[in-house]
Amino acid sequence: MKILVPIKRVVDYNVKVRPLSDNTDVDLNNVKMAVNPFCEIALEEAVRIKEAGNADEIIAITVGKNESQEQLRTALALGADRAILVESDELLEPLAIAKVLAKISTEESPDIILMGKQAIDGDNNQTGQMLAELLGVSQATNASEVTIEGDVLKVTREIDGGLQTIQITKPAIITTDLRLNEPRYASLPNIMKAKKKELTVKPVTDLGIDVTKRVDVLSVELPPSREAGVMVETVDDLLEKLKNEAKVIS
Amino acid sequence: MSILVIAEHDNSNLKAGTLNTLAAAQQLSGDVDLFISGNNHDGVINEAKTIDGLNQIISVDSEIYNNFLAEDIANIVASLESEYDYFLAPSSTFGKNFMPRVAAKIDTQMISDIIEILSEDTYKRPIYAGSCIATVKSNDSKKVITVRTTAFDPVQKNNSDVPVKTIDALTELNLSSFVGEELAQSDRPELTSASIVISGGRGMQSGDNFHLLDSIADKLGAAVGASRAAVDAGFVPNDYQVGQTGKIVAPDLYIAVGISGAIQHLAGMKDSKVIVAINKDEDAPIFQVADYGLVADLFNALPEIDSKL
Image (cartoon, rainbow over all chains, first blue to last red; front, side, top):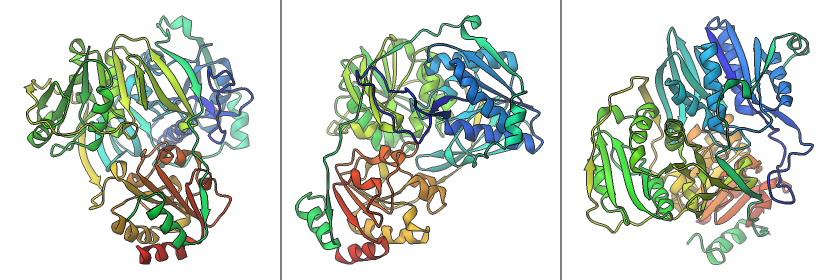
């Protein structure tokens, strides 16, 4: 069985992102970049499936700028067997990325595509579902547990009211939620080994896919800030203010 | 222009977020139709007939749609492509699950989680966990949009007889099947629509200690939430989580107890009208967004609040 794990290079989750001074975009100059946390969870799940003897090969893939090779090397150090960079100088929108991934999936024929439910930059939560639709396959989003029983996958999903379990048939797309697993760290020997693993670079222009932007970002601004609050000394002060000043309790 | 809003419901009642999504739809110019796919959902249709400003209800009733599986809902919504210019759904786990499939099917770059409509094609949406707000303009002829429901006041229900058009189900795709569900049972209001929310964080130390919040919540008619740290630690189930990847809430009063205030949590609650923070660490970032801050040990403060309410 073959697992494809699409990953994304994003700003490290600890970085507080701000707009550029001309408000045309976010300021990504000299900020630390990393593998999107949900993608790490997807990769970890793929590695665990392989370790349990249920998969033979894990391919990490990303669609992005040349420097995304750094994140693919991380994926290789964490257990991917080989990696593909579909290189694009422009950052592509989710639909275009899904089209690129669909094209590569048709070439690679993975049994499962495991990916993050969203990237923490755009917070779109679209690519996995779009890819599933483009390939005409089933999906299980927001996975918190994956069980493999032959050709059938049982996936528990985090939904607003609690948990839902569905059954999907391979090939299928699973997008990962936070509590699916806790990703491991790459060990030094594995980081060294990753340097020798195969990393293929394909220019996106070779794929013959229209990746033209459909959405213009007109501006990026800080959200309205909240006015500074007050500190209260006692529970009595707090309740008094909530009743008489804010009037939110009676 | 015509606009289709896809209703979220449980075959018995409409979910509150549907009314907020309709409010966003009514800011666009055009007739607004409400699409209800479900199974034996007459109660939902009767409720929907009372919604103000609706042109008509489109209903499809079949067991295929009983569990709202993404593949089949996306299929029937996209089949209405030629009749509508806009497709809107709440940005809940329901809407997020199938709307990108609709967008892929009709070849449109979807716009997720809008918080403001500036014009027919230009919207505001949060990015980077709400650290920034992007203004985006869609150049696609058809728009597929999910709506952050807390950013729009719900439409009212003073109407009496919105017309209903019934359509046929499509052939079942049989791509996925429903196995089971564990839904939280609670007499308290739903987190996303409660007017008061009290949430606990890692500082609660255990799941048992959440009873300190439960008791106050019952007195205030509040919903109980949690930070990711508290959910990850296993104190409470995932459906309690407020934040970037959990639920987005904007109640009149949000009380954060033992929550440090990571940006991922703030993303889910900072649009609340009044925020109270109770934390023993006076440097906790939660105090920067709080209207009222109390530096105290929650194990003393909570019982005191409880006794004085």
